[in-house]
Amino acid sequence: MPARSEKQRRLMGAALAYKRGESHTVSEEIKKVADSMSEKELEEYASKPTAEKKEK
Image 1 (cartoon, rainbow, N blue to C red):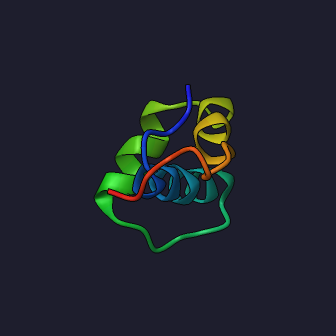
Image 2 (spheres, helix red, strand yellow):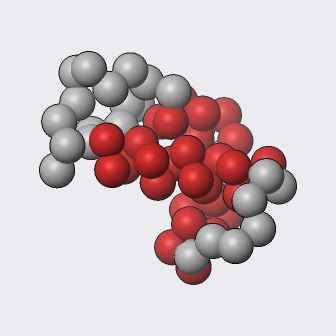
Image 3 (cartoon, rainbow, N blue to C red):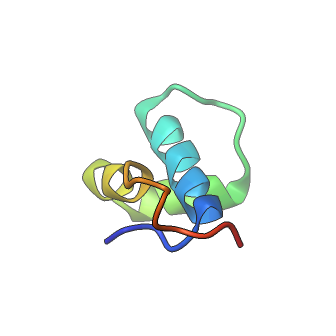
């Protein structure tokens, strides 16, 4: 499932980085998203091209 906006794609990217251990200082929202989704799901959301999505 692709992200609906650029902002959502960035959130998923931050959650993916946290889940992989690349980022340690993150908000509670990002921790919650990272804990509720698998790494594969986060990759799918974060890796979609942004040309088809609008910034909201």
